[in-house]
Image (cartoon, rainbow, N blue to C red; front, side, top):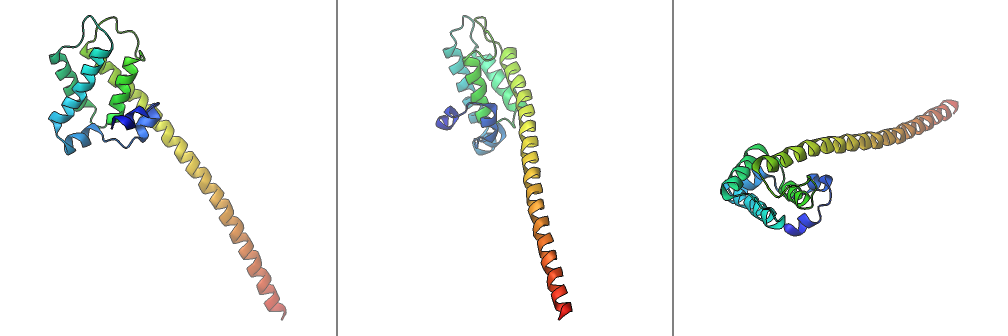
Length: 161
């Protein structure tokens, strides 16, 4: 799975990812394994960013439960991307401490951005589909017009004979 996560460079990549959602992960494995998976990312974040006041175990438990409860439709690729962004400073300075409210805010901000991007992608796909359909419609009209012209010409020939 982490190999496919490494290919994630944008939110669009996460949206198009075939990794399961948190809800699917719970259905496939169970909530304890899914929670443990999220906690692994939190431990990795704690280790990576060199904090004076890292998250403690109780805070990690709380964050993992909140993510599961509030973001069941989020893909595991989204979670990976959020933590990758945080580790690279994408959510701003950590000021040597992490807290549940800060981490959960990242998830909410990401989800809001993701929904906007998903809406834009959907609108673009619809416009392309509509444009493609109008091209097909133009071709179909041209074919019908020519068939109609041929049919009229054939009828005229038949009438003359």
